Length: 144
Ligand SMILES: [Cu+2]
Image 1 (cartoon, rainbow, N blue to C red):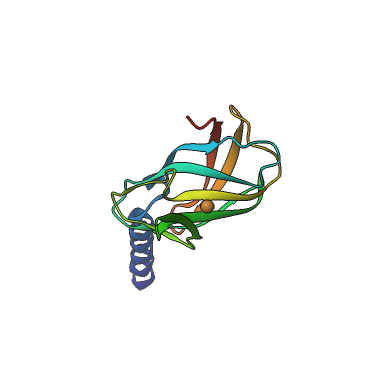
Image 2 (image 1 turned 90 degrees about the vertical axis):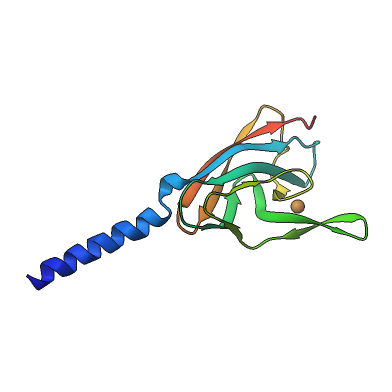
């Protein structure tokens, strides 16, 4: 029966596509934010993204409710000075671990609605092209 083999092919294709970078293959870990003094307008979050799958994925956006704007930033050295710039998207190759660290990649919280106090927890939402949306708990810590 023709329609049956077409259906089987469609199902097989669906499995192949979802097997390419399934929801279980992106891990976001060790998320923490630097505590801020009262009245601070910006904060920074550091974390680790692991792709344990066999296909590349892509971080397409980050949102939070704790700040008016949440951006992915990179840090570049220019004339001996560190400058931050917004990174619109981040490729996460298969098998890669990408670390966001002070002086490197970070999530910038712009227009904080409240100060970040050590011990506090809040949530970031990361949107991946294949793995979809992830809720990531972030712990606030004193820089040390
Ligand atoms: Cu920044």
